[in-house]
Image 1: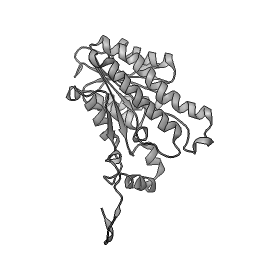
Image 2: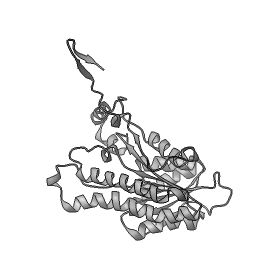
Image 3: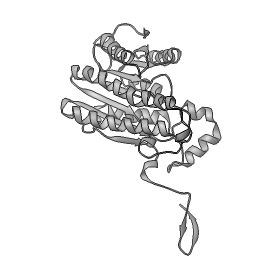
Image 4: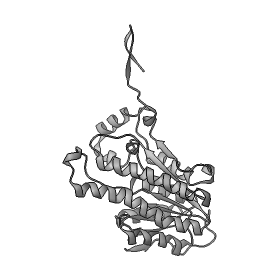
Length: 276
């Protein structure tokens, strides 16, 4: 695994004296969360498969006066994920927070049409990648006296979505792993939570175009898609002392999707259809 430090050696005078790791930090929610950690005073350790994109995120952080180190990382590979955590400890001396955000999987399609190897690709990154991340992050957090982990799931991990068998299984598995880890380390000063976003305006939805964005917004009770900085704000809250009694929670960032249905019109007995 190639590693590329992008800042000078750390000192004890860093703004918050804390270190955050983001796996899956090259774009979208991961990149925005990395920037948010840095703005909050964390030194950040960033991993993803795309070196060029990672370097761009690190450059943004440095331009704003933050500190970052990057490493090409495959979360599905044991040695690669271990090396990313080791990079945090060797570069900055500790680890205080981790956000496991990487995902992968097949294109949507009916379950019986999925290639088994493609299904396994989704499980490898989502479930096994999150497991590997926590396996190596937890000892580093314990060595620092405790900390917080946030894992990335989705509303699809709570409520199934058609044609997304690998994604639903992977995100549901992440929620289960999160709950177990939260229980295992609840009395050792490590909190583990999971965020479950709904439709978010990431590069995928941006590339899909205005009509896809409009339809995605229509599926949300608030009537719009979310933004990456809205998810990042929840991740940072879950890693902060402001959420000190929160662990094992699945936190929706979904504009109300998981609360229930809000159809644009409803039938009223004797009155016909009325807008909600």
